[in-house]
Each structure stands twice: as C-alpha cells, then as structure tokens.
Length: 79
Image (cartoon, rainbow, N blue to C red; front, side):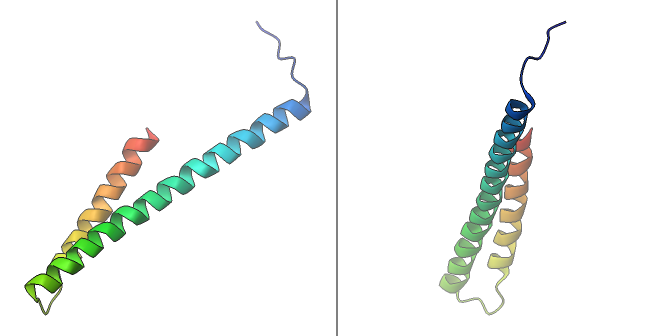
C-alpha cells in the first residue's frame, strides 16, 4: 500500500485544477453543439431561399439533423 504524502492544500489545489479543466471541456462541448446546429440551420435557410419555398421545410429538417449530429458528437466525445 502506498501512502499519500500530499498536504490538504495540495489536494485542494488539484481538485480546483480538475474542476477548471472539466468546466472548460464541457463549455467547449456546448459551444460546439451550438455551432453545429447553427451551421445546419443556416444551410437549410439558404436552401429554402434558393428554392423559394413558402414553408421552410428544409430549414426545419436541417435543424433536426444538426441537433441529432451534435448529440452524437457529445456522446462520442464524453466516452
């Protein structure tokens, strides 16, 4: 059995560093999700403009696809 010779202050500092790293990691994941969804929404919006649709089905479907893709990315990254 190995003894842990770290002081309580060192352990607290290590916990703070770990929580900061996790915060940055999960914040990045959130911004990535937003980026993916917005990109697909923009592509769908431009396609609907190009085809002059009165009902914006391509925008709706591309947003849905962007949400599914972003959830897939989150699951893949957090494993």
